[in-house]
Image (cartoon, rainbow, N blue to C red):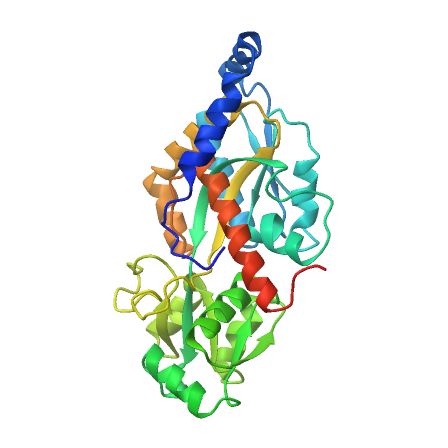
Length: 337
């Protein structure tokens, strides 16, 4: 997740050039061995680590991905949840795993970027992984309690400027997409709204609906039913283009706040050192999954969208997010000293 327009150039050309140069220096015998591994891979079940609790959005996505990959890989893909430490336990487990393609990770910016920037962890969230693909991107929508009486982003900003100590916003926890997305917008808008962190999106949404807090930047899948019921008013969508589920709601960029988009992205990765041919085998399989209408339907139900990025583009995407989050967390005094 990062304040940006999600569909920009991801500096892929530079990364791809570096990769191609590195491969050129590998002996032909090693490249042949790597290709042989890819041709036979996988020969046994693959474990897909989910660094979040079973039953949550990440687990739902991981299981859907595993189910779709099994017939393409010809082996079972087993989802194993290793939750805790703001996604760092499962993420660290994969960083230390054997780089043979049999231990993979579906994770978010929390494990790869945000938590490693906020506290010390025993791995590098970017350098210690071979990124394969972005398997989903989940933008957030800025919503307010319908009783607040504002219908546009401009009206909200005017209210916040007129009564700077009146408004509060809910988040699903400090350092998450719902917190950083709101802060990115507030800083771009130049307004002051008090942050009220909650232990998850569900209680945050509950209090926005109840009027205890006035606004939040939350996932579309959670908020859409209440938007349709008129209990919440959607003011802006944090993606490069409007959601087909809310075509009447402008994007942050359309409202004049491009670059303030913070989404929850999910990548598929392997430990650093995984043979490039195995990574490519997995990339091709993920590309087939992304093209599956059933998988696209599942993403839509989660308020998510597909992103067709190569391994090089995915690596650049994560690195770009790290740079953006470093800047944003620095302004919030949340960087690890």
